[in-house]
Image 1 (cartoon, helix red, strand yellow):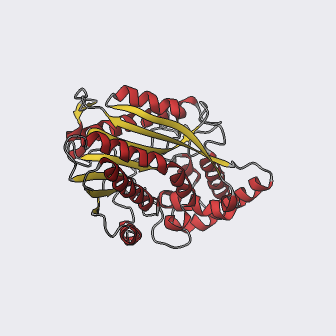
Image 2 (cartoon, one colour; image 1 turned 90 degrees about the vertical axis):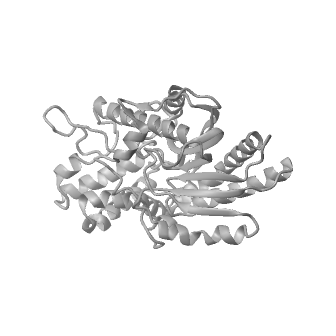
Image 3 (tube, one colour; image 1 turned 45 degrees about the vertical axis):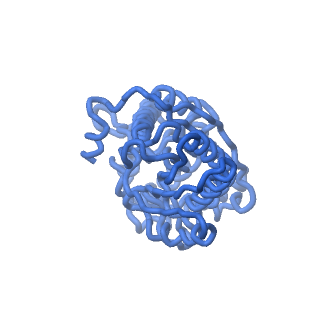
Length: 379
C-alpha cells in the first residue's frame, strides 16, 4: 500500500494538531542542535577555504508543520554567522528548502516562519516549500550543502507485503512487529527499510555537493530484538485499542488484520551497515541517545495528544473518522492503566547521525534494473 496520500501529521493548530503536540520532538531537537551547529561549521570550513560561497542551500526533509523546523533554521543561520565571522568571510545567503509530502500542512508551516523572520532581520535568508517524497529525487545534482531530517526517515515508502501464499494476513491483530508476529513480518519490515534507506542515500548522494553534510534524527531502538515492548510501545497499545474496537463491532476485524503501519524502528547497527553498503558518505557521528519522558510527558493526557497527532490521519484513512474519538479514548485508558502499574516506557530512544558526502564516489545511479532518475519520473 502506497502511503503518499495518507501520511501527514494532524493539521492546523488545534488541541490535537502536531503544532500543539510535538513537545517530545522539540525536546529531542534541543538535545541534537549542537550536532547541527557542528555540521554547519564543518561544511563551511571545507567549502569556503578557497572560494567563499555566495549561497548555501539547506534542505529539511519531512519538515511537517511544527516548530522543530524553525529551531533547525535558527541553528543553521546562527552557525553560518558565527562560522563566517571566525573565517573572516562574507555571510552567504541561506536558501532553505522545506520538504514534506503533498498532504503536509504547508500553510501552517509558512505562517510560523514569522518566528524566524523576527529573529534574523539582518541576515539574508529565504525559504520555499519543496513538496514530494524523499524516497526519490527532490533536487538538482550537486546543489545541496546541508541536509537535515528529524523523525521522518523511519517512515517507509509503503507498507511491506505481509500475506501468505493464500493471501491471508501474517500479522493478525497487530499493526507492527510484535512478540506474536511470525519471522516473516520482521523480515518484511527490515527488507523494506533497507530498500528505502539505500534509495534515500543514493538520491541524496546525487543531490549533495562534495563535503556536504547530512544530519539525520531517527526513531531508533537500543536492542537487537525489535519486539521489545519499549521499542514498539505506541504501536502495541494502538493495536490493543483497535482490537478492542473490533471486539465491540465498531470496526471490521478483517480490516484490522490487513492493516500495518509503514514505519520501521531501526538499530544503530542496521543504519551503519546501510551507510557503509551504499558507500557515498562517511560517518562523522553516530550515537543512540535516550531522552527521559519526565514532567508533562509522563502524563497520559499529553502522550495521547502526541500519539494522535502523528497517527490519526493514517489510521482514519483506513478505518474511518467516525471511530477516532473512541479509538483514542481507549488508547488513553490503556495509558492510564499502564501508568498506574508502571508499565509504560519512561524514555525515548533516538538515533542521531552526521554524514559527510565523499569528494569522489563511484557512480551508483542504478537501483535494481532502473535508473534513479527514471524511477523518479514514474512516480
